[in-house]
Image 1: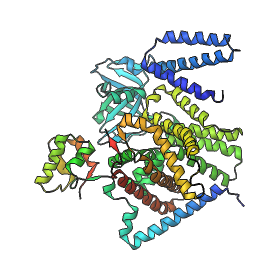
Image 2: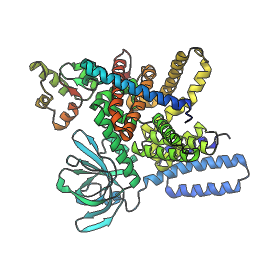
Image 3: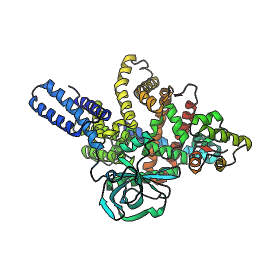
Image 4: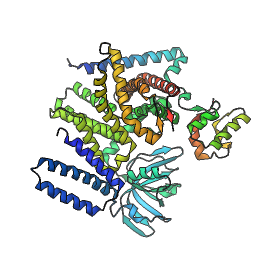
Length: 468
Length: 109
C-alpha cells in the first residue's frame, strides 16, 4: 500500500463518527481492542489479515478516543455541581484564554484549581466560561479568585451547548459586580503561550496605530487571526460571496512566515540545517500567536512536515502530511471532527489537491501560450475545486449557496495575497524599523479598501447567492 | 555577495514596490486630500446607513425581529430621519443589549 496513513486516518475518523452515533460500553471496547491486538500478534505474518485487523483496531481507537475525551476526571469541576445549583461558589485559578469582548460584555475561559463552598474546600480541574460586563483589563495567566453561581450552558441553544462541550466547557459563571473578583499575585499558565500572546498584542498595536478602524480589523483577522473587530456587514457580505476564508489565517500565511524567517536567516548566513530548525520554531510560535485554530494547526503541521522532509532529504507527500495533520488534531481532541472550521479547512485542501489536477488534465493546457490567461484559468480551476469541496458543508451549515464564489475568489484571492504580504511587511517593519510603518500602511489600507469595494459590488450582483 | 534565489529577489522587489507605493500615496493625500477616499475605506462599506435602508433590506439582514423593523421604519417616517443612533433607544423593544448590537451595524449620515 502506497499511503497507509491516509487509510488509517479515514478509519480513525470513522471510529469517531461511530462513537458519536452510538455510545459503547467503555470496558467492552477495551476488551475488543485487546482481543484484536492479540489476533494481530498471531497473524503478524499474514499481510491481508494483518491489514484488516489493524484497520478495525484503528476504528476501535477512534471510538475509544472519543469516549476518553468525553469522560471527565474525578476531580473535574463538573462532578461537584448539581444540575440546578443556586449555591455561591468561590473558585481560585487563572485566566486561560484571551478576553473576547462582544457588544458590552466580555468572555474568557477560567481554569479553576481550587473551589470552595461555604467552609468546604477541595482541589479541582476543568474549564469554566466566565461572562462579565465589568472586568475588561485581564490578561492570559492572571491569577484570580471568583465568587458566583455556576450554571450549565443553555440547553435550548443546542448548537452553542455542543460548541462549548467540544472545547471541554460544561459550566459558566456570570460576574456582574467587581466585588465578585479578587486579583491574586503571580502569573500562571504556559510561559510560551504568554509570550505568544504578548507578541500578538504588540503586532495588533502596530496595526491599529497605523491603520484606521476598518482596515485594522481586517488586517488583524487576516494575519493574526483576530476576528473580534470585523464589522458585521463585512463578514456578512464575505459569507455571501464565499470569500470569508480570507479573513482566517491559513496555509498561505504559514508559508509566508516560513519564507520570511528562512530569508532573514539566510541573510544572516546561518547554515541550512539550523535554519530549518529555526524556521520550524517560528512556525510554531506563529501558530500560537494566531490562536492555534484548526486551519492554522493543519497548515503548521503540514509546513513542519515539509520542512522536515527537506531536513531528512525525503520527498514530501501532501496526502500523508494532510492525514498526519488531521490525525494529530483528532488525537488531541476527537470532537474537532464535528467542528465546521476543521471540516472546511480539510475539505478545501483535499478538494484542491485531489480535484484540481484531474480537472487540469481533463481540460488540458488550453491557454498554455498566454501566461496571464493560463494564470486566470488555473486560478479558476483551483477556486472551482475548493468550491466543489466545501459547498456541501456550507449549504448544510449556513444555508447559503453562492454561485458567485468562483468568480469572487479569482478576483479577491490575489488581492488578499497582496494584503497579507503588505500586512506582514507592516508588522515586521513595526518591529525592526518603526519609521517605515507609516509608509507601508498606505498601500495596505488602499488594497483593503479595494477589497471591500470589490466584495460589496460582487455581493450585489444578481443571482450572486441564494439563501434558504 | 549574497546569492539570492529568484524568489528572494521578488520579495526585495515587492518591498521596493510597497515603499514607493506608500510614498506616492502619502504625497497624493497631502497634495489632493480628496484622494483619501482611494486609501481609506468609507464607513458605508462596513455599516448600513439607517436613514437610507428600506424595510426589505432590514428584513434581509435578519438581525431584528420584523415587528421592531417596522417600528424603526415608522419612527423614521414620523421624524423624517434619525439624527443620532441614540434615537434607536426610543423604539419599544430596543434595550441596551440590542442597541449595542445595532450600533455596530448602522451609521447615520
